[in-house]
Length: 68
Image 1 (tube, rainbow, N blue to C red):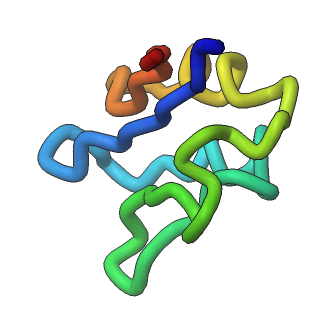
Image 2: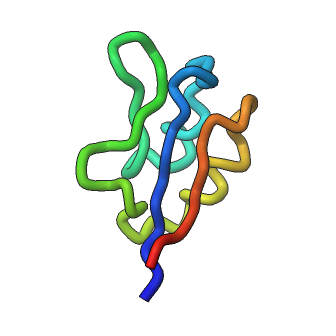
Image 3: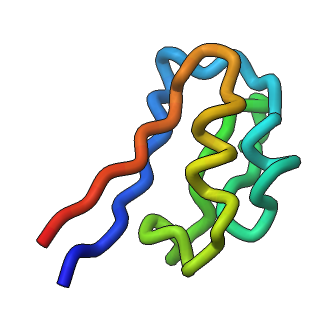
């Protein structure tokens, strides 16, 4: 079975926060305002808005892939 894997490229992130607004159960922002995946949520936690959060990122810093 394929597993979703989410990754935020911190070097590319500009801290717009669109991902955290779109899928707050998966994304947050660190102390510097950069996006990150919440602990234990690198698989998306079944949130149907994960791909939408990646799509609305203004700098395409989020990748959503599969493994398995």
